[in-house]
Length: 153
Image (cartoon, rainbow, N blue to C red; front, side):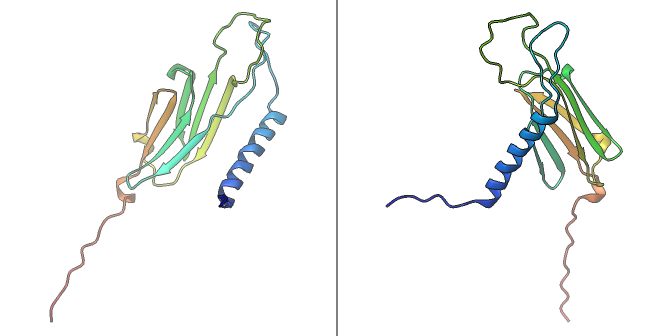
């Protein structure tokens, strides 16, 4: 009996979206070089996961090989903005590179925040190549249980 993989339209749409993002980035992100290096650098877009629980929103971004000094995180006017730049590991001129597939250069990601975010308590940490931004919800926005009273008449 042959195993048949079920068609998952959500997964297919996600793959399609990612491929379209890469195509658009490659078409419209101009190639640029730095004065200290003839190796081309491209703009790039780090991947992001965003989830919500009862108390907070969490944004996780893959930024391998970057230090906290290379990343700027701002929360302002209902927007989360993450900017950074990943530089080529070796600033020397080399003609013997066979392939450069990792992306280098500047990036900027901007996300609209829900109105229940307490921006003053936002925190960011960088650990093992993953930037994690925690955006707590305001206390008044958190769900509150209501006790049901039963009366016997």
